[in-house]
Amino acid sequence: MVAPRANWKGFIKFGEVAFPVALYTAASTSERIAFHTLNRKTGNRVRREFVDGETGDPVEREDQVKGFEIEDGRYVVLEPEEVAAAIPESDKTLKVEAFIPCDEVDDVYFDKPYYLAPDTMGSDAFKLLRDGMKKAKVAAIARTVLFRRLRTLLIRPHGKGLIGSTLNFDYEVRSSEKAFEEMPDLKIEGEMLELAKHIINTKKGEFDPKQFDDRYEAAVAELVKAKIEGRSLPKKKAPPAAKPNDLLQALRESAGMATPAKTKRTAANANAGKSRQKATRASAPKSRSPGGAHQRRAG
Image (cartoon, rainbow, N blue to C red; front, side, top):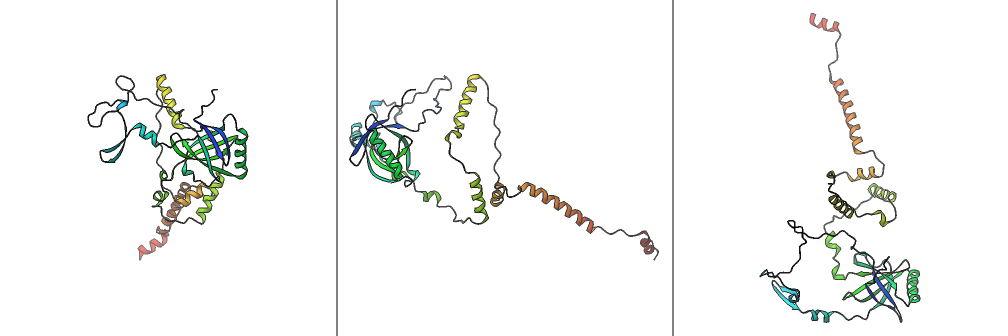
């Protein structure tokens, strides 16, 4: 098996202690199924081309330049050397600025995870930092120029090594107030809350990523295989639309504390039928004896 290639090499520094580390991608989408765009008539791949928005003429790579729009149709042109000069200089050092409780950073700030491993020398210092953070139950906030941008990383112990997650900047994280501003101010309590807690307790488990398969990837892979073999996949039936239900009744049924609503309706219909039969018998005229009827006719 080929050893993974480091995305970045540098140093971690905390206090006056520094040691070399290598950074590796922890999560990648490279294994996902990828498509190419083809010409339906010829079956050939389509080539992407940059064209002038006004003239429609192709623009060669050497004639392409970055631009920042300041008004509609007006741009500030930025030459490649100007952009390169604006990038902060990197000293290849992850400087630890603070140690904080592991759960202090909201997950919404997490960007991408990377594994940090000792690079050649300095493994003793690496283990010292890892085990020290484990014992203190803290994470490290560090900054460096990573992939041409100044990035903040949250570094935490992870197995035998460390994991560094790049963090989104504050301006990149949208406020949750806008997302939740129209939520009504409701208070759930009493039986509903107790039933919800009961259901949650019965569904407790552990996270195992192997249990969660990528159904889209599997379905597309099966489709490609079927096309190669010249067969068609059976058409799937549309799932039935979900129907609105009574929340309390649904909670009771989920907790196994009530008979399903359908059973109740059947029983109610049966009871209603018996009631109708009783009402019919009660309203029917009582039968008279033959003698009584004869006496009235004779009179």
